[in-house]
Image (cartoon, rainbow, N blue to C red; front, side, top):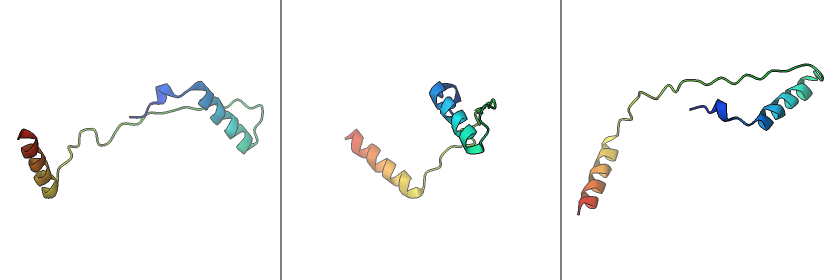
Length: 65
């Protein structure tokens, strides 16, 4: 997921200063808000193709020997 809680303060300051310089708004308070999104694939199960299923069976058979 998005690790917005673990963004270092130095990187936040870097972004604020970059926006100030790019937008030429020196001295203006700038607030940067980080939002975490939900993972749209967290409940989706990955379905294997027929080829992947066969390879998996071969590997399991090989490991059991």
